[in-house]
Length: 475
Image (cartoon, one colour):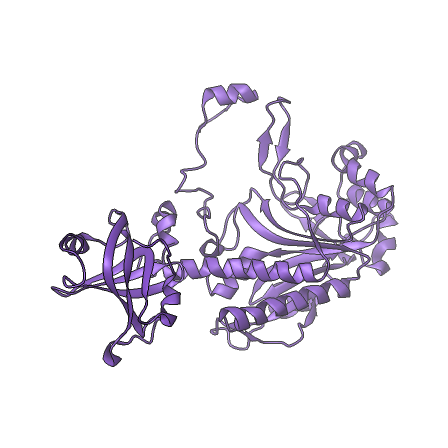
């Protein structure tokens, strides 16, 4: 058989030609002597016609044995369907392939759910255990392709505006950034641990000290926190940082980025959305909390319309918030956030009114979801030192956890700021889904397990001994 395989979507322009296709048998309709396969590949579905007049006796017998999800190779002639048999619901609905050769490349067991149908009603544990089958469905394939296209467009936009894509380490040190760290034990330095980054926050600020000026990264982040529909232990950010930039300038960059992605999804990839606002509203934290009782309001005119996108900025967040569980004040965003100019003097007074101090922080909200958050950063070491003190970090702790950053700042630090997109949340809204698990190829369950790989899992005593770790309590 010919090795010159084409995709299903390419058959429309090949009427009368002999072609080779390879893919999965999606649906079988055995009409007696004539058998129809819907052959599925990444680009779509095309109808295959198999008859005893066009196949050898052995191949026709094989055609009778084939079952859904078997992988086959078909060589045949592209022919136009009769007018009554055309299917306007699929891109290849005007043509079909009259099979001349058939080869089975791989057999398959009966799947635990129908791959040819939407699996949103299938139990999530089953879907994630057999995620490679779930990803074969049209809805999930569409979500993953949407993810690819959004990331592709984001990269295009950032490259065109002179941002450098720079990778930062996954093995770093544990620092207080709001959630629990995932710790990685060191074999060479027993009793010491790396931490997986909750964000590249300090590294991207160090890149500004290094003079990179405009940085971005599509980056994995890790937070050991309680799960919900819009959270995962590991998630993806579009991380952006720039020097010599104002709050308004970085918000404008991001607004143009979002508009570019939405526009190009429509013009290049057939995804059409309606933008509620031509220019994203700027709303203060105090006003949205008063009016909507949330800092991520849903401003859509028609909340039933999944293709309506209502972007808005929320600005002027409190710099500090009281953490009831800890019984102390903490940073609303993170300690590196700059304080509004008119409030800086307050932190140097005795017993400052911390609740009245505002930050140069900005969040981008979309249809009731926070999809991006950022701030102008504190570039004055004296102010940063004072913020650490207000957050009750002692001098030794400040030196141990942040000394490297303060030391870097002593060598000249440009004014800078940035933002981080929660790509999974953004994609969830664009795909019309209710959980970010629907737009991640291999997510964890809501209680942070992976049924596919059966993780987290036990490790051998030999591995624990090598790391100098003793497990206490129940496993």
